[in-house]
Amino acid sequence: MNLYFRLTWILLLAVLRRRVSVSEAMMKPPRLRLVSLPNDIDLNFHVNNGRLATLLVDFGMLYLFGRGRVLGQLISGGTAPVVGGTVIRYRHPVGLFARFEVETRLLCWDQKWFYCKHLLILGRDKVAVSAITRTCLVRKGGSVIPADFLARLDHDAPSPDPAAVAQLFDSANRAFDSHVPLLLESVA
Image 1 (cartoon, helix red, strand yellow):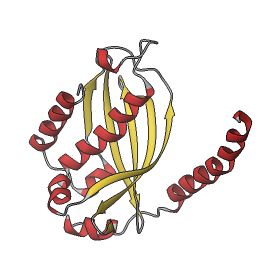
Image 2 (image 1 turned 90 degrees about the vertical axis):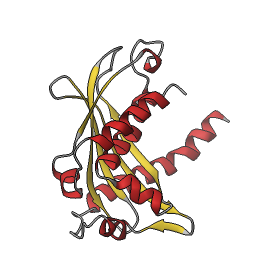
Image 3 (image 1 turned 45 degrees about the horizontal axis):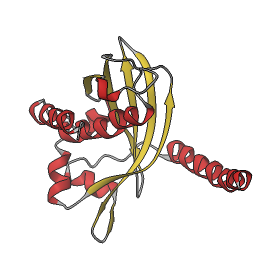
Image 4 (image 1 turned 120 degrees about the vertical axis):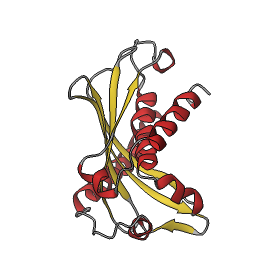
């Protein structure tokens, strides 16, 4: 419940501000300015990691989709973005009432996934949290091919090579899959 007001504010900002093209989303993405609030803070008096992920990934993508006028295409096509993986790094704590900016940049896409880079920036350019996500668009009957969706947005340029980013997720998945059984055995 406590995120609905912020969510409404972000949607309003995204719709009222200048439209961003797919090319701009890749080269010079918009930044969303936010402030950490008391309901974001944990017992250590900084924003907890779950809320950081929400502020960074969910709100960052929502703002980018709103600025790019992608939300209308998603709704009219009965399509929803689903995050299929996140690699995240926490570098610096974000304290109470800290002012920060969220930047979400579209890196590339392949036959299934959109890959985005997310930054939470404190002050002038101090990166407090960084993440890379892979997101697919799903609708009834299956997923949407990213290039087909971008064509509906009048973007027909090819993707930058997604191999390095895709390899990051494949490596993380293999490492996770190989260690989980060992972890479960050790606690049994």
